[in-house]
Amino acid sequence: MRFTVLTIATFCLTTATPHAEGPKTAVSQALQLTLPETAYATVGVPFSIYFDNIVLTQQPQSYGFEIDAVLGQTEARRWTVTPASTQVGDHLLAVRVKDAKGTLLAEGKLTLKIAPANAGAGKALRLLIVGDSLTHSSLYPNEIARLLSEPGNPAWTMLGTHKPTAAKEGVAHEGYGGWTWAAFLTKYDAKSSAPPDPKTPPRKSMSPFLFPGADGEPVLDLARYFRENCDDQPPDVVTFLLGINDCFGAKFDDPVALDEKINSVLDNAEQLISAFHQAAPKAVFAVGLTTPPNDRQGAFVANYQDKYTRWGWKRIQHRLVQVMLQRFAHREKDGIHLVPTELNLDPIDGYPDNNGVHPNAIGYAQIGASFYAWMKNWLTKPGID
Image (cartoon, rainbow, N blue to C red; front, side):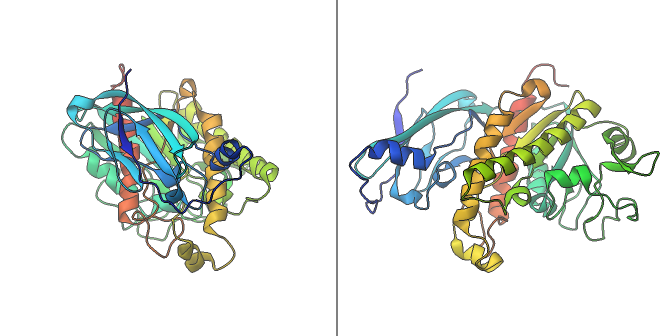
């Protein structure tokens, strides 16, 4: 395929001059350009790659970003496209990072898959959304529901026992503030009542997927969950957006300890997804790549004072995304699909000025659009009813 350079980000000339000895290798390694193999878009819905989210630096504005593609355009902090119907299909994007002098520091590529606006029309979709406080807010599930309600979409049903007051009509999920992958496997209080009334605060002591076994001990029982809470029908799609609470306090300055922590967390993810796969072998599991931090250090000061910093979490989150890509890429045979939710989230305009990890309405809508675009592409595959 022949590419034309259509987009070049503006350089900021404040970049410090690298040392003369091997600057390209040293800076390239430090930047850690990280891209998924595949990203997803759909006709009429904006998709962006925010440059801050693909490199490990405190000063993304000090570098130039070039995207070789036959579509899209560059703005100050991102490459963006709102696909037209004529652009349905696969598009290879070549990404290059340069210093202020134009020296190539890092390069990579990914395929952007664009689905038609009517993908899935006339079909049915049963969707279960699982996550932490980002899901509990219900704003990105609301956006998924809004987009699925547009013409050209399947008839959708959202499953789940949790319907916070912010959830729009028909929106439900299993998203709880502070929860982790492990919480859905282990959080159990025998004294806790059945799933709470939708008007009560979110559950804190009982995973919706755990039930008492014959000996009274908790058992992970997805088949029972589907039977009792989903009209005895498994979902077609389960989305997961977790990882912040699992890794937020990890040792960002100890690479060995950080990798041990991340792999332990992803072992829990594997266990939960495997249990879903066993109970719902025809379902697919869309794993969102853990979202990036607010660009503002002041937001972390507002939340955590001096205990946690933006740069510390950025280093953890960037490595977490890298390991997730290593662990979950090419796992479609297990029903696992990666959704690059970290690409399409604006780290400035998508966040309030006083919260380090929770987006504002703009950012939540971008997360919802990422999951929706993946679903539209999945719905184009043959054999999906």
